[in-house]
Amino acid sequence: MISYAQSIQELTNTSFTIYDNDLDNIVWHDGNTDNITKEQILSKQTELQTVEDAKPHNVKKASGKQKLLDLGLSEEEVKALIGV
Image (cartoon, rainbow, N blue to C red; front, side):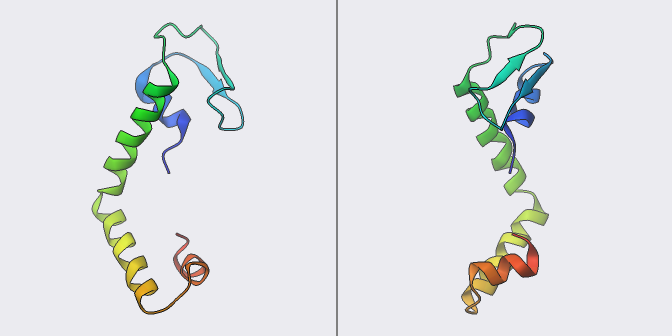
């Protein structure tokens, strides 16, 4: 999963700290000079996650997971096997 921090880093070079992965707990060390909004962060996160999910390795992993589920394994069993 693409984190908020990764998304912010794609939007700005400004130094920041995000506490508890909470968009309401961002400390902008140099001020939010680019005026980054929560909506921009969430939009960038969605964009980056879409790109990540489309990578061949992740497509194959999702396909394999679905095949295991189709065979009757539970979500917990699949997670124990492949960590997803």
